[in-house]
Image (tube, rainbow, N blue to C red; front, side, top):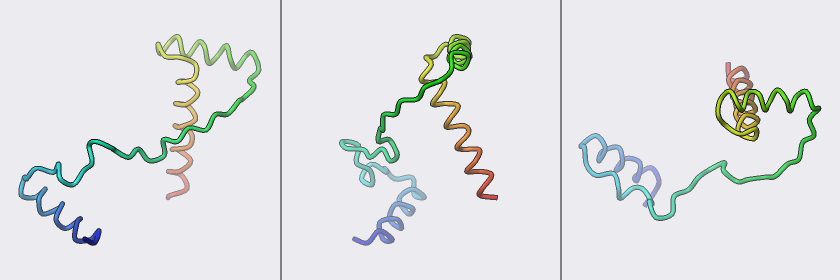
Length: 83
């Protein structure tokens, strides 16, 4: 079945309040953009101290702070370029 017909069936079923389960694969879900690429980054000590202080304040680890801040920056950049 073509993707357009499947989309039409999905929308019709949704509008009718029907069960949406047949349209999704719950046994093997896809997670796009989740592939991991390990990178090593060297930071000056003052940056590490700042990251650790923020991590402690938020109750998360240093890596989570780094990932969150980079994601926020990339999202902001994407939003700025889409205007």
